[in-house]
Length: 110
Image (cartoon, rainbow, N blue to C red):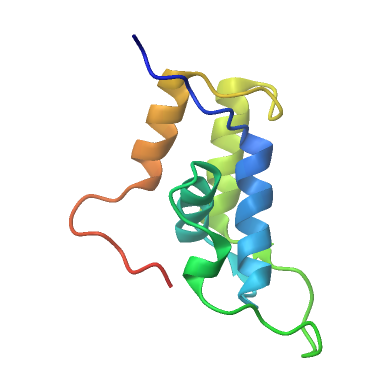
């Protein structure tokens, strides 16, 4: 029997990546943060795995902005699936994961 496909939406991925970057006090959302967000959404990691959050009492320059690679990724995937709130099917999820997983040794989580 096939394993059930987790319910992952493009909107969830982008929102979680932005939240994680903000949690860490980063100014940009990067492809690494998208990969990290996917691991969080798949229950492979937690926000706490990435370290302590930036205190809300420390002034911030504003919310993190997506870098050019993230903007291109979001456009490409939005064109592919159409509705960013639609759950990804098994094939799309596998393709998305492959795109966010670089070849070679694992990257540092920070």
